[in-house]
Length: 220
Image (tube, rainbow, N blue to C red; front, side):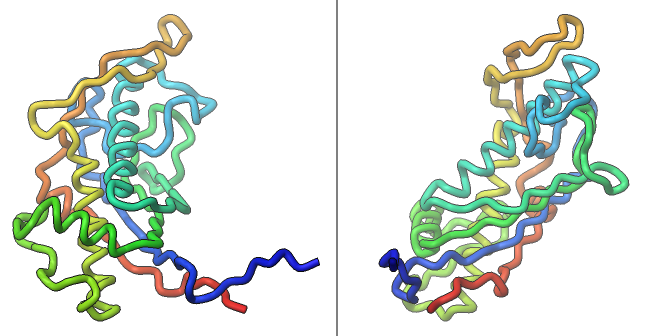
């Protein structure tokens, strides 16, 4: 019996963008508030846990930045996050909680890109984005060509990711976060302070964002 479901071009069809973050230049000194880079996985993702509380706080900072990236990406519209890959020096996949990432890549998909563009444009106005040189188009979304729309969303994604990575700015942001203390062999809630790992313009320069034009919705 037919389900009654069909795909059509009248449905919302996500457009996907691949994001690559080069975190190789960020501090790995566990006691520094700017350390930790970007970490998609919490300490308990690994069978080999942190060997010190400071190392666990370092991973927590990276995880806080990752969560901030996700919040910024969905600030104006729901999104999909797919195919997250975190690599350590080598490069090879992280296998222990003490490892530090040198790169993070993932795919983000938006079904309502107009909301993303208009939302960010309303937030920043004519001001430059985090790179200090680029502004969003002053044209209405409907007036942009398909290629220009994609280019504007690339900028929106880069801005969102930059804002997430630089959470805390230079002064610092502190929150209670789960960490692992090997001295007691238990999880504990710790005060974790996060400052940006680099200036916003340098973080922006560490990002590569490109449209994935091969992921399309099948219609029948």
